[in-house]
Amino acid sequence: MIGARVSVTTSLGVTEGTLFTVDAGCVVLEQFLSSSSADSKANYTVFNADAISEFKVLAEAPSVGDGQKRAALPAVDADFVRSRAERAITKAAEDALRINPKVTARQQAIFDALSKTMPSEWHDDANNGSCIFLLKSVFIRPPFAPEDCVAKEGESTLLGRVQKMLAAIHKRLDADPRFRAA
Image (cartoon, rainbow, N blue to C red; front, side, top):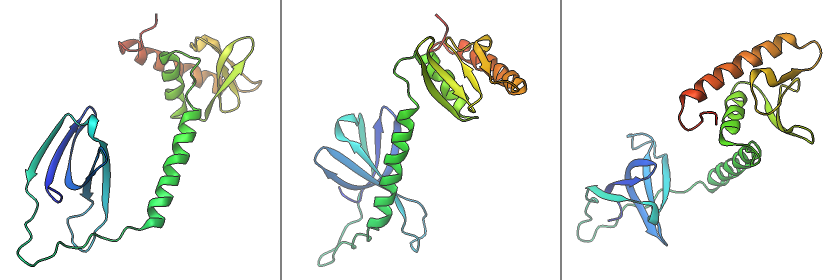
């Protein structure tokens, strides 16, 4: 079946591609970035075989006639793969630092929303617990409501903007059943 056009369904959705390999409990699909034969760049998606809920063959693999050899696999640019893996590991480590296991899902969602538009970091305070520190100028104490904001002296304009953003974030989260205030 290697080379067949397939569809793989997981809890994350459906992915189509060419079956590249099946090995040691994983399935690898190849998706070419361009239909041009001159441009042979492709993405490879690796699936844990246990996570696949449905596997469909959309088109059989091209047949190889008598005496013909299968086309050689394209060369793998090891330096590119290595640099891409290093970038992914670095990004995952940075993302892990943004998650605070000491706060609720709603509080983490507030932090995530704020960090999309301005530099944000978690700050542990002995008196207040986990606080959000924005732009090195504004502290937001739990439960992270607009009135829980404190800014450095001279940052009243920034404080007003942060309070407006927090009010909008709370309004959006109140409408989401996963994050309604308890």
